[in-house]
Structures are given as C-alpha cells and as structure tokens.
Length: 103
Image 1 (tube, helix red, strand yellow):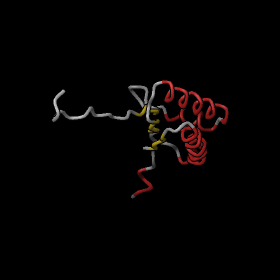
Image 2: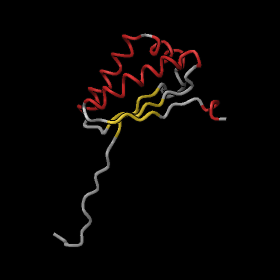
Image 3: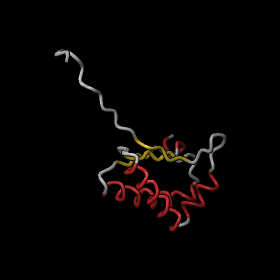
C-alpha cells in the first residue's frame, strides 16, 4: 500500500422527493397529497423506509410551485417528516420555497 495514497472518499447520498414527472411539475396532485393526512403519513413512511433500506444519508424534498392555499399543509408535512427522519438518524433537506416571497 502506498503511504501517500489518498484515503477513500465517502460521499453521502440523499434521495430526492419532488413533484416533477419528467415533463411537468405535478402541482395539482402535490396539493391533493398535502391536503390528505393519510397520504402525507404514507409518503413519509415510504420515503423513510426507502432511505434506511438504500443506506441514504437522508431525503431532499423539492416540491415546486406549492400553492399559497397548500402552504399550511406543506408545513405540516415537513413538520411530520423531519422527526420521522431524525428518529432513524437521517437528515431532511427542504429545497422548496416560494420564490415570490423572497422578492
């Protein structure tokens, strides 16, 4: 073994959860999911189980174009998702925000 060899680099990976189907942002479907407490819980459970099984560092949530009427449900979703991820030692990153609110 070379005494000057670089140690292997470990790059943590995080799964991505978004509302894009490869062609369009699925805003209506995302709003419906966020409004349904059972659907939110099921998605949180499924995503958490996936992250654990796939040995991910966590999940990145990138929901785009969250309607104003869905903001409260989105906050509930994140408020439920974060503790679920943290309970199994994983991270939750939220990339979704209303850009118009930053202007």
